[in-house]
Length: 379
Picture 1: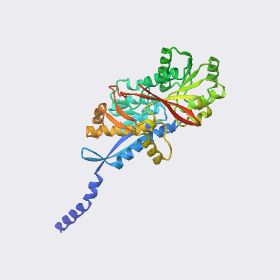
Picture 2: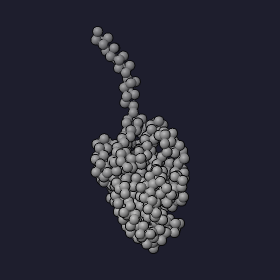
Picture 3: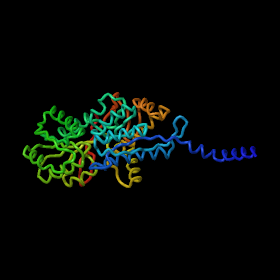
């Protein structure tokens, strides 16, 4: 009887062994993603998340093996609502969730406070869209970004406006966020160095809807251009109201305003906007056209701005895993500084601070309700 029981048990173990092996064959590795998924710029946040999700799905479909172990990626997508306090709470949640790296956050105002939490945990943070120079100037070894900084974007936009648009005077308005103030500061320094008259420096906020008081004041100054530093949710109404008040000034703006949605928000006011965007234009990216087609097929809509950068950021994390031959967060981090990755957006290599070694700024305008690439500035 005893022998029969052993035989039955052996048969049972043998029968389930393949299923046991299958159950333990894959190691699940979690990568975090953070962006505003609610609020006025949720469309930009969802676009970033979509880019990261597309990369995760592709990598899983192709199959990923690290150190002889099959690895399945999981995206832990979180909403920081573009709020600094929420961002730190979300960052701590991702640390507690034991992510191996984080792609995010979207905004400089959320990336900067969250970066300390990732640094203390020793987790790689790659922002696809935070441009304030402070982000990588804090001395953290965990912070990286795959776009040019405002120290490059501000001067590029300013130089283009002076040399190509021939402006002689400009009023500056920022939305009082870390991003808005930082970009406006860099722009202001450059235009002043080029001898341009700054007629006034003004502040609003990222929840504002009525800009008529500021615009009426600026109309009296009659500048050749107004530089608005903020996001499209406010930059659109700002441009629309400027047109309604009959201002003749060109509207200059950075990447936060430079979205495909701007014509919907600004109406015909978008026609006077010239904006900059860190990174190569999608149509000039090595894999830009193919990426746009894949994105459209997967999500049933066109991309906004930074989806190609979140897509590349996920691949850069996986590239670090492969080079480290490990899914351990500390070993991934150790491999990050020596990144040399050729992706959709081009080549990514980092300087000692975690910034791109070679930044590119693209310049756009709007015609007939469509965003159009007009120039590229290499920094």
